[in-house]
Amino acid sequence: MESMPYSQIQKGTFLVATPDIESGIFFRAVVLVCEHNPNGSFGLVINKSLDLELPEEIINIHNLANNRVGIRAGGPVQTNQMMLLHTSDRIPHQTLQICEGGFLGGDLQFLQDAITDENGPYIHLCFGYAGWGAGQLEREFLDGSWFLYPSSARHIFEIPAEKLWQQLLRDMGGKYATLSMIPEDLTVN
Image (tube, rainbow, N blue to C red; front, side, top):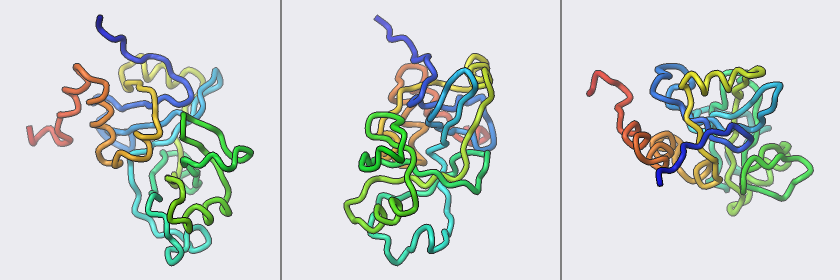
């Protein structure tokens, strides 16, 4: 029996960009849907690393003991806003569980504590987010811009950002696995 493709957008769904998206931040992007309801949707691009120098008030590089901290371009909206995506369930009053083992939220004190703990949680500091108005994301999905896949903390935090798009397509199998081998620059083909 052939497995049905995953087709329900909800909190905790990965949006995997199809090859139809040829440029911009969504080129080969993986977006974690953090909220989806009749009024719209918002998510975080989790596979676009950023190389930023952050002020010491946010991260004092001299105190960085946790090597599981990464910086991501979360999306094109409000790129000066930082959101914390992490694996800690210690502050449930400050966080929203997105998937099993994946949480969104936390304050600067949580961040400081987490980065100074060599056994601290995985953390992605996401700058910006992706947002869609009512029905917009569904239209993009139906128009063929996105594949859907259920998220997991392993994919979010343990797969290197630059390999996540290909890995998800391989995990989806079949024709999707074939798409994972398309070169970024088609002139190389």
